[in-house]
Image (cartoon, rainbow, N blue to C red; front, top):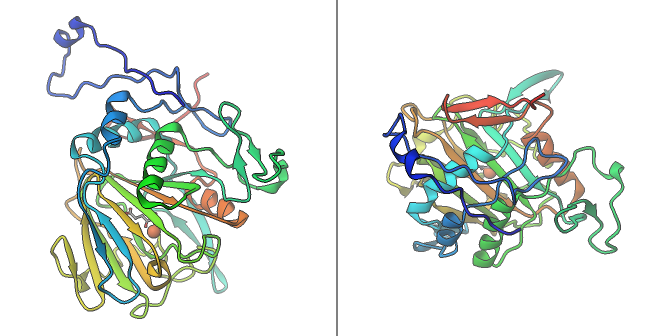
Length: 350
Ligand SMILES: O=C(O)CCC(=O)C(=O)O
Ligand SMILES: [Fe+2]
């Protein structure tokens, strides 16, 4: 999809601003925006200023971390240029739609309600289907090219908007992996989290490669070997015990980690992920390790928001159903409100 030029500000607008301290934001035009019947609203393409800088990625250095049993990480500190990471964060927070997903799980005889403690959204489809080229973007069988019958999925898969597709292609080029899913988390502040889990779902290829980007506020990313703590998801990726990925408020075991920015004890690791970093998890990492972003007191205020983007490859239909169920669900979309400085429920006008 072609990129567009941001609207030019007039000279007057520089002098009539009533809040000079506030960063001026140019609204990208919707002329080349990505749209699809499944989107609540269109998503503009990235401004050229961001694309130009993004295309010089990876910006910083990378480190292969495999000095622990079953661990295989490639840690790109500053994959995305520091200067552009904030602009990309602002763009994605402003222009993507997010969800606050609620769902029920069965634990023994009783049912529990889970509220995912962060905003989520997802795009993509597993490799048994594909999206036809823009603008129609309907689902086709990748071998025959024929349209996929509607009944094939309960959910309604969404193609990646061009802004995320651009980042996906860059990531594929750099990692030599291929991806068909993009999951996005928005942590509004330190009260939002994801607790210990692994992304070892049976619908991903074995020993999956998962590329994980951080934008915005710094947050601790903790890892621990499963030999120390039993896994907490079943093979469908559904939480199965009281220490699920979403309902274990404050149960992050961070006390066993040491405190430097990439540190380890015998059983746990801690990375302080910064805006622009990319962590590629691969090999046996998902099979043998758990990871989490624990809640953190003091991560609050206007710069507390963090976006995480993961690229993954699902090879079975169940992957598509699972990802949309747990990252879109059936609730209302949210959209960033710049005036209020928070996500608000988005309602269609009229
Ligand atoms: O926010 C992060 O860095 C991790 C997110 C994560 O683990 C996930 O979405 O599965
Ligand atoms: Fe994860």
